[in-house]
Length: 353
Image 1 (cartoon, rainbow, N blue to C red):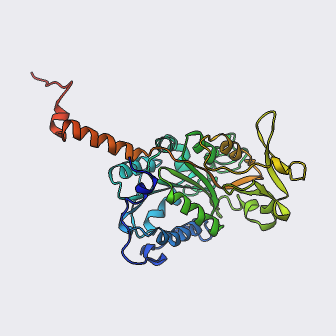
Image 2 (image 1 turned 120 degrees about the vertical axis):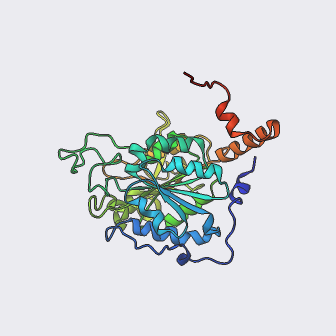
Image 3 (image 1 turned 60 degrees about the vertical axis):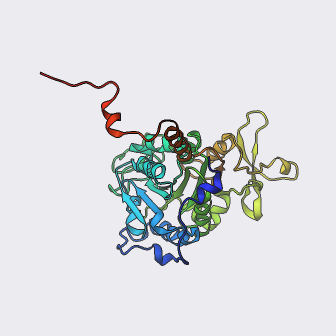
């Protein structure tokens, strides 16, 4: 089975140097003025040349929703597919055409409501594809109904007295499904967004990136606490592998520790006495336990103590390579199969009379 580096080398390289312009399609971008999707699109278009891959071998697959317009605006191959089914279609592409770099663009409604099963099975299989999950905590395309990530009590057109549903945490869900790469970033932080995309692109297997994205029409300011410079300093936990998990004013006045009794994680004010207890982030830990605990630090309502960055990045056999090995072994043992024999063989019968 190919190792991680060999898997990343299967996609043909571009001939000559590429620029952001090469990845812009001729389609008029149609999102509401001020939508966070514009920032994500610009980041992806600007980041793609860094991959050095032939754009004819890059594919974007989307489902249904505002974010799912994405393939139209990328000058690559792509498909605007069926509601919630983008991971399944992308799985078919990635496993049958291993010379493609396959990306899924989906939203919190598309991925976590009707598409929930398709998402978790793509994650557990570790198919070689990258999933960008735009989370604005609202249904934007259908004009402002609550979504699977909307907070409890959310007043919307479909919940006029407030949502009763406990929201999904997409990062926790992905970690629970044993995803090998899980990250979170914010639409307005171009530098951080690009660095996370780079890490996801380099990962062999399924990479899920949750992108907090503002819907300025139906849920404006949902992530303002993470974007406002003063409040963000006390709310955002920037994860860096190999470094202590610290944040807050003065370059790290707060830190994350593990309770020695319960094993739970907690945020504390850093002192000389507890400084040695501050956790060092290990994104490559084979166990997802600590990453999951980190994902649960953020309060769903206030978003205080929200980790961003790569929570988990581990290696596991990639589904595409395993399937390819099985096919090669079957051909070596039995030769190439015959489709008509397969369809007419075994438990079949003919109806007469």
